[in-house]
Length: 130
Image (cartoon, rainbow, N blue to C red; front, side, top):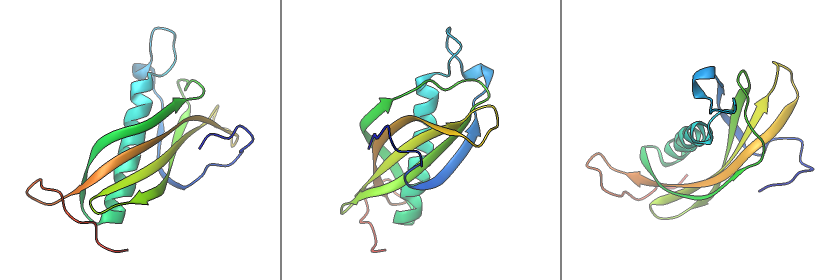
């Protein structure tokens, strides 16, 4: 997924949120766990929309932190459906920031998360055709 020459996000913008001071580590950067959480939320939204129902996260297959996120950055998470199985769906994610409320963007993180489609009883359910 990573391509340093790439200037545009891959996928569909799924969530946008602002990094706040409460989410920083001792160095003043935003915690990686906070970024990962935002990516998991975005991935779950994309997966649930496609499977037309409830999903749960079952794996983080890949996660690469490319650059730090700073307080005040607008974190934008883009999603792409990479694979659909019988009950699982793999979502590719890219997190980009807009710094200083400018239009310039920088990719900060990318990953691949796997979700499983669930029924109302918490059992795996087949993913319906598109």
